[in-house]
Image (cartoon, rainbow, N blue to C red; front, side, top):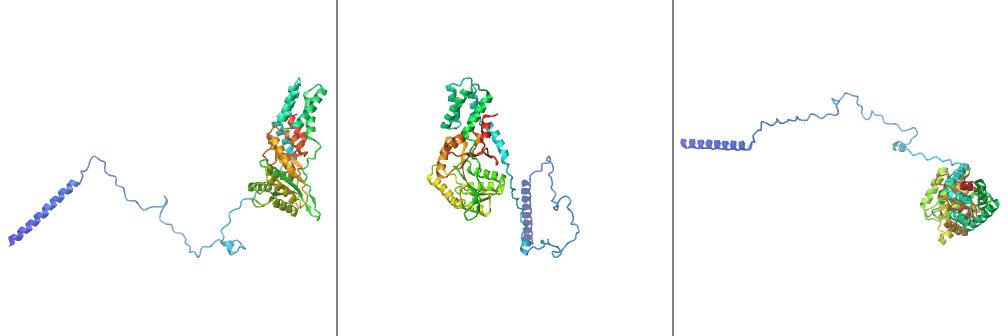
Length: 413
């Protein structure tokens, strides 16, 4: 029995020993050999305690206060609780200052300078032709073509050529100074120096004894610069010391009312406007009413740019004038024409003259064309004087029309 127990113990010990040898052999196979030629591995030290900046260190002893000891900012004296609790209002942008328009006198100087640069086809072309040694029929035909190209019109051209031929024949010698004086005299005769070119803005007193301002209607087709001309005319009147109210009766284009209001704000003129697509006659009526209430000197009414081929729209323009006349007579009706449109401008002028009584003409874009003869043609067509001319895109590029300055600019010194 003892021998049997001893044998079992020896067997168990043998099994444990054999198992250990097997495990040791397996571990030796899985462990790779160490490459002694490779550099020793870099050992990264564990991260240190994170710090704040280079000067971080232990907190410094400082005085601490409780929330009860902290004083809150005090509201301004007299402010209410709601005002004290409200956040401060952001700073408001400063309103643009009112501009001081340029005086009228300086604009006439610019008129002559600009016309002398751009309108040389009519005046200088005629002087060149008249200075030829022999004025044969071909030369006179060239003179006629020059006048027609400058939009003088057929009838005024024939009249001018006949008078020039007669005077040159009688004059005999033709020095440059004599030719210039001759041409200047004939052009002034065609344009007219005795016409009333004043823009009437005097106003008057109604039958009830109410003082009313002068009323000016500005009419014309789209694209002629009608709204811009109205704004520039306001600057001319303000420069002359007149107070102005603007009526934005072009209710079919919201941009037109915005544009006119901008012009008015620049010179301190109030603008009366209505809803987009509203009744233009109602806006015009309210504008005159506002002018009476404010004791303004002048009311300028910008009408819609009527297409002269649409009878209904033209009839509505007549309605605007009739409604405005309930306050009193209209003092001035200015027709704005684009000087570059030539004979098409004459067609527009005829149609507008049938609807409203045109009292004056404003020619825009006169500085950018050599067709200065439109001044002669449109006056002959309507028997109405040109009163104002637009010289360019600047705010003060609107000037009274003076025949002498215009002709001198055309033919040069």
